[in-house]
Image 1: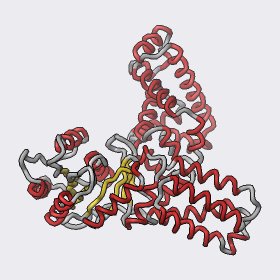
Image 2 (image 1 turned 90 degrees about the vertical axis):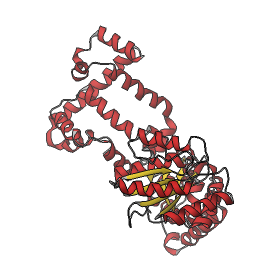
Image 3 (image 1 turned 30 degrees about the horizontal axis):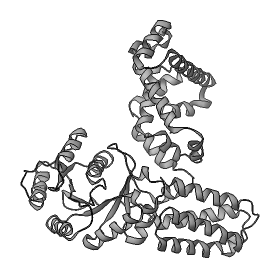
Image 4 (image 1 turned 180 degrees about the vertical axis):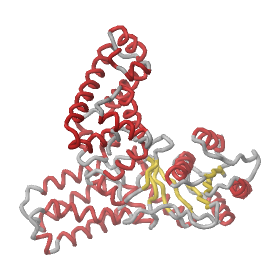
Amino acid sequence: MFENLTDKLEQTFKRLRGHGRITEANVAESLREVRTALLEADVNFKVVKSFTDSVRSQAMGQDVLQSLTPDQQLIKIVQEELIKILGGEAARVDLKGRQPVVLMLVGLQGSGKTTTAVKLALHLKKQQKRTPFLVSADVYRPAAREQLRTLCEENGLPVYESGENDAPLDICRAAVDKANQRLCDVLVVDTAGRLQIDEEMMQELVAIRAALEPRNIVLTVDAMIGQDAVNQAQGFNDALDLTGVILTKMDGDARGGAALSVRSVVGKPVLYVGVGEKADALEPFFPDRMASRILGMGDVLSLIEKAEQAVDKKAAPKLEQRMRKGEFTLEDFQTQMQAIKKMGSIGGLLDMVPGGRKLTQQVDMGQAEKELKRVEAIINSMTLKERRNPALLNGSRRRRIADGSGTSVTDVNRLMKQYLEMRKMIQRMKKSGGKRRGLLNRLSTPFQ
């Protein structure tokens, strides 16, 4: 996300580094480039004007003009203003009040509302220890309720089963009763959408709101449609008074204009962003972290949180103990790879590392993902004994493994060479004693 905007801003600040001091002239030139970059990212025109005016007034201050590091000063100001237009403080869904707390999802067809309902329920279950219950009030789209039921079954979430001829309002009321019976504390309501905003849809949503009195009315909107996303948010907010927005398909949006415009134009916070198709591909929206990503500074806090969620808390200490003894098997290697895989794509992880975007431009990310899959296939083709004792891997065994994984013996040999080099490094750290104990601890937890 934000690839185009990040590249343009990095080029702008790089040119500014050649100046000894910041002046009105180079501030004006830089802001012209920033303005163009924001408009090309499909940020709302009024938001761009307000943003550049604010940056200009701060950059012209006496302290900044006398600075010996004009690029750093301007980056600091731009970062602070980005955080402001993104919403300042991070906002979350309100789960206080009478249970089940009703969370009503609204949006047009194709915005990813149903998949987002499941992602959100799963997030609340795993991260906030809630007991969610889901219901589809969409009686118009073919197989809408079937889609929600299937996704809920795949992810171990309870869902209300309505009758074929039930009306949306009756379905919602019955779902509240069912959630109470099952002692579920959150009810996620997946409402019907249309291809565009119309009066009939809004009347139905207003009626559901009046009947359920939801604590949260959250709009799901496709980030890839740019300014239309902001217009949709405005239309739904005028009718329903939204409490927040979830931007879906952010991983496919290289511009990011919707995220930079929604809060300023509509006045409602972005709560989450969808960053993939998997059920766990929903990230809380942090304005300060997103501003850092936009400026190419990475997002280390989110990276650490992903690592903590991916790591098996019981297995990590045992792995650390083995590594301290100089023991590291292919089974351990496989465990580490699976943890990294849970954290997301390589490109997405590198985006969170300061300066990592430059590496993604130099490396073929698609090829890197294929290589990881190849390595995983090779290890999966080994027996448990072979993974735990790689010394058993003679020529015939390597041939069998290559045939079983759809790779070549050369691929298997290359993996073994990499593994042996890693094992030697761990054994050297073991010999160095306590000085590198902290590093061994980090190696047992990916990216920590």
